[in-house]
Image (cartoon, rainbow, N blue to C red; front, side, top):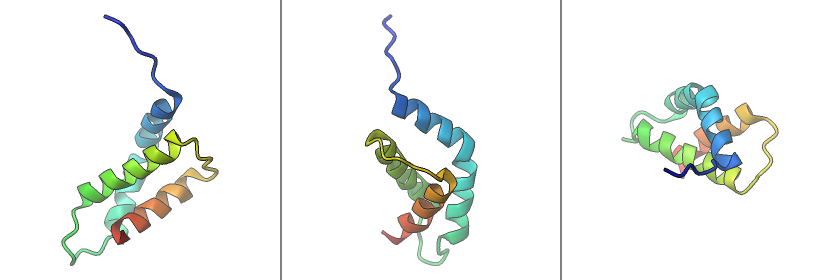
Length: 78
């Protein structure tokens, strides 16, 4: 069995999800309108995808919690 090297973006993504996943979910639940039928799981998945794309493109994120808050707030709006 051949082991593949895990790209740096993937490692960082996994670490961020471990460290900030709860924060992201709680923020989505807090800011998402409850009366429009949006699914929190779908919004969280899209928010994580946006984070992944940012890391993959090597976007520099200075304040991680601020960035996660921003994507948690803007994802339900899109």
